[in-house]
Each structure stands twice: as structure tokens, then as C-alpha cells.
Image (tube, rainbow, N blue to C red; front, side):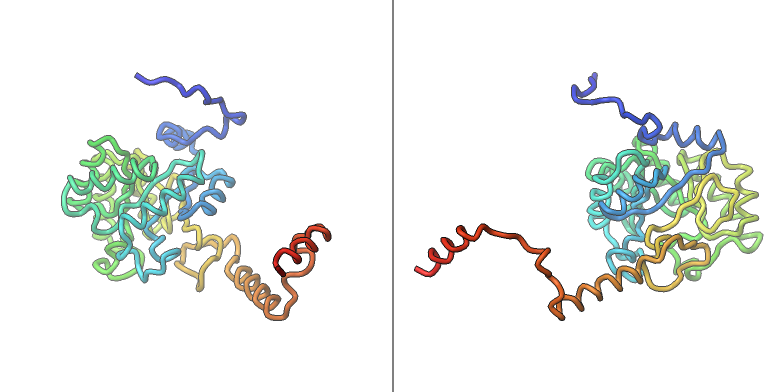
Length: 297
């Protein structure tokens, strides 16, 4: 039996209640597009909160965007948990999903459940995400769902196994490959996933598969037929070198501004322009005189 905390108050803006699984289902039913972004720290979480997005994913893409790894494969559960805890502290309303990193769930259902528990208990995630729709991934999804943790699936281009897929390129561009993606999506849906990500698959393929999907589907490079869209924080804001994948739409170019700002700071320090008098703190003249006498003894 539980009771409401004494200090709990109703939010002033009822439209900013925390997003829940029923909220996502209702938005899907009403045809309201779902918005998901990645976040990896407190500032990016606060930006997502301010933007009013529906879901935030602490993606294993953080391996490359903030940890400097060449791919998502190397990142550990402990590293992603650290990022997820920071994101949790910055969020109030979006539904928080934690990516299970490569090697943290594939061995057995027990391993998958244990890792998922950590993301919920230690980082405060509302759900976890795992990649792939093969028999092993479906079994792991089913085990985690049975343990009481919501699972988001992920089909199409799955970065953790990109090498086996022939690299970072679109999937499902043949009838056989498209049929495999459809089978995987339906298997994950049947296993109890509350949502799926379709990544880098032909728009026409996604449109056909969507006819058989009952759960919300978030697309990334999968066309407009999905129930929502997701982009990586650093991709959409231009906090990286290069243009990124074909499906990336840039909404800002922050990397050049960051570089220019830091270069200007460095130049001012080296020239003596910074700090200027207005950046300092004053002391009463009498107090300063007394201080000088004290240190001169």
C-alpha cells in the first residue's frame, strides 16, 4: 500500500504531465506524431524538456557523440548508466528510454533482465531498448517484458551489428530483406514490445509494414509513415563534424559557433583583453590596506 507524498502538488500546466505508456498509445490513436530525441547529459536533457518532446533516448550513440569511441560497440553498461543518470536528473515530463549496450543482453534472458533492472533502478529509466529482431533478440525482449520492464525494439539498420549487415547503410532494399524486417517487427510486437524503432529502411517498405503494426513506431530514415521520428541530438543541432547520414536534418549549426567562441576566448586571454575590470570583484580600500599590513608582517 502506498500514499501520496505530503509535498506533492498538482502541476500548474496539466499539459506537461509526465508522458506514460498510455499517453503514447493515446497519441498514436489520435494520429499525433511522436517526437523522440537522444540526450546524454543534464544540459541536453534540459533542452529536450524545454522543447516538450515525448520521448528521450539515452542512446548507445553516446559512445561516439560524447565518449569518443569509433562505434557503439565499445560502450559499456556502466558508461551508459552514468549518462542515463545525468539525463534523468534533467527530465521531468518526457518518457525516458535507456539503450542496452552491445554485450549486455545477448547471452541469456537472465543477463538481459539483470541489465534492464539496472537501467530502471540505478538510472530511473522508464523503459529499455534493444536492437535486432532475430530469435535471440525476441527472446530477450520477451524476458524483459515478463519481468515488468517496458521494451522498445529496433529493426532495420542496427548499429551494434552493422558489421554483420555490411556497414552503416540502408536495409530492406530487396524483397527478401524487406520481408525479414517485417517478420522481425511483427515478432517483436508479439513479444510484447511497447514500441519499435525503424532505422534506415525504404519509405515504401516502412509504409507496408506499418499496415500491420499496432504499437507506436518511431522512424529514423524510414519515411513519414511511422508514428513518430527520432534524431540524434548532436546530428540535428550540428554539434559534430561532417553532415552525417542521409536522413539527418540540421536545425542548427552549433559546432562552428562553439569553435568560434572558444577561439575568441583563447585570443582574449592571450592578448590580455580578458579578464577586464568589470569581470573582477572589489574590496573596500580600508580593508585592503589592513590586509596588506597583515601579510607584510
